[in-house]
Image (cartoon, rainbow, N blue to C red):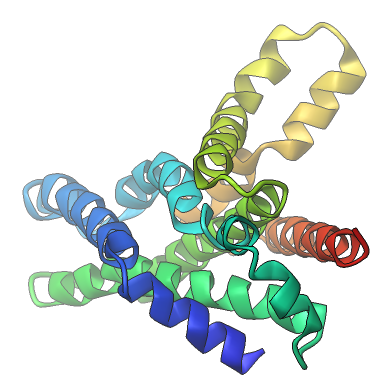
Length: 234
């Protein structure tokens, strides 16, 4: 697993992808921080984290588009499957590499909170709650988009599929309002990432939401593992 993790993490910075992803998240978080905190003179970072929700949804597919699809395109996936590393190690290694890049990128919010502490008295428990929320959102979406990348050898298709899923996750709240079927309304509300994410933006550490994000992430990691098992015997 560690060899896979180091290989994938290094690959992010041997191309512009890792730098572009981190720079983009730093830019958006910095812009929101300046606009809604420094310029407005408030230590409440709820708006910043609320606005980062769609940013993360649409940037993560770019981060994950090459994770599995590149090996398929280069025909190195079979070499990985026959290497002295378990399929679970392959999946977790790739996942952890993307997660590490994401954590580096989203750490900008903690740096901004530190900067803010020189001008005011931020409520650190609330800020940590915010950070946990954005972290859970990103790590769950990485697992989903990694599964989508495992289904194709085209990075473009993997990225577009991730964007479609992200768009669905943004619109699922609206779908719950427009459908007439009571069962579908309940399903859409329970699938709402936005509803699960909202408590963290107001500083509430919501345990059911934590379990929801972890469960969804684990499910899609398992599905990615199942795709690898299928590819092994093709």
